[in-house]
Length: 197
Image 1 (cartoon, rainbow, N blue to C red):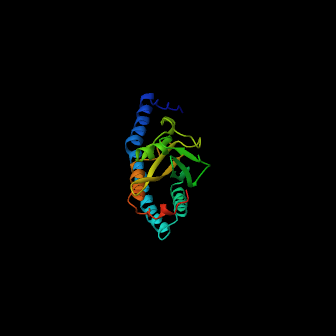
Image 2 (cartoon, rainbow, N blue to C red):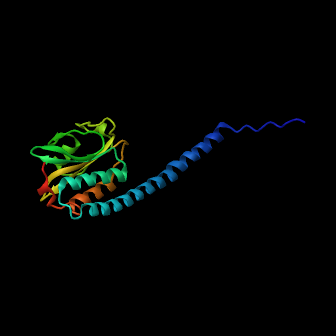
């Protein structure tokens, strides 16, 4: 009995099916996953804001509150580094943080933290290697967000968050962190009257 040869599937047919897989991934699967990720991130922030408010309720000590907040951010998102720098004269001085060892002092206008202080705005850095003047406290840091903290319209410190991944931070992070610190949801102006820095 003679076997019939298996028909040859041309290279173009194989490439056609690969193209369909790539198309489905890029235009259907990937956008759905990005959407799910953003929804999950928003939900995490909703919970984080409630937890932050509960953690700081009734406590007026700045260091205690910032220490708990840095731990809360680190536990919630598993960022590489989360911490605070507090204004002292013309420098930002390291405050409570979670993560690897950090730079102790940052001058006004220097690095991402100093620039956020000087420009009084949130700065998102998708790739720290491309930020002019970036201060590399850890070689593992790939992206960063810095949020100024105000008391009586003066910047009194910054929240600094670093990630091991590129392009971690977006407008969801910026808007939620600004809300947390600029709207006094958590910040009590009495905190900074009790700050030893």
